[in-house]
Length: 528
Image (cartoon, rainbow, N blue to C red; front, side):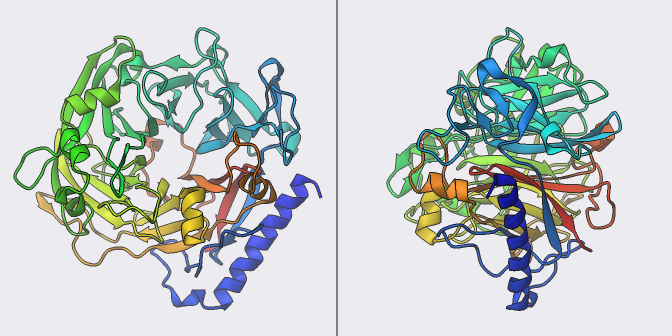
């Protein structure tokens, strides 16, 4: 059976399984807000080949998959396929020397030149690159185009984790999740037709620093918010907090090469003193961490400037530590809540991804930063959804409506084994909890209950890798790239500026990528 047939059958299995789950009791869960989601009762177990299971109101269609050839390959560098680098001449899949998978990651949907495009950076492999899926192209062999795989000097740049569209600079902003000096932010310009400018050469944006950046997002003022994911060193019972949340305030929001101020988030204890890296790494059982992860609590925040100017790339992680910013347990991605005027920023914290961890905050959660404006220097932080053993490893995040937050897991093979459960995607209904006119209302009442809209399966290629495939390819499938957008490339289309309407307007589309294995990117349709 060829890969395409396998994918079609996998999608059919997922749809049928969703219907079966609904018939077996999924209807006992409440639908959430404007999104018609009924709970999928269980995650898929970690055994054999499993189909994706979606909530009954949703269906999925594959829009791209790993062995699709690029229409403009860089054969000399092995950049020839959507999900594979073929530099070593190895076969594409399921052999002991199979080609390196490149893992298309986070999605960005844009409507440019009257066409509907999906852009992704690629997370692993010999070199980083960016692809574009033409969603209007009916021939899959003509659907995926290479946008960028070299920097301004003509060299390869690091593999890419995060991506967003910056309408102020007309660039895709790409993040490399590696410690300094490798990691950082790169910009690739697009013209009005969605094609790369300057030959697609990526510019390293030194003023934004170098660190293990992943999530990246603009606000309406042109500031760039960055979420860092660098795992902390092991401690007794788990890992220490070691990653930061950043905000870059540009001198000129239309040209990030002109520099600006890079800031890091500092969280203050109840007595008004900052919770610092030296404190939390020396004592990863600090009661402050437990308090921070307790629903209903909140703490004052302050942005501390850690660097100014346009000098060569600097170690942002070290600078944040030196400035007494507050580290967290692997924050990964963040988005602004629609309808709040960019006053609420939500980000995920992955945690330790191990059931053996006994440290506070081990299962992470979803945090909310509330400010009086996007550019305010102070605010408050509270946990909007608390992780636990069943719901953890939170990674990508997207708002589907004003109140419905989609959060997906990347728990990893180890935790999959420990809890015998593959990854899931959840809807958290946030209701009306928010920062209002001088009165902090967030956290009051009952914590939002996660409703599973997706129980991810495991395709044959991922099963092969998980059972002993090449060490350079990942194992179990992972959910990544959850993305809801109407594709508006203007300043008015910055994510968070509009109220999403995926169930009522065909302009709003939902995507996710089943990373690893066949590396399939899916579009979800919500059926009212």
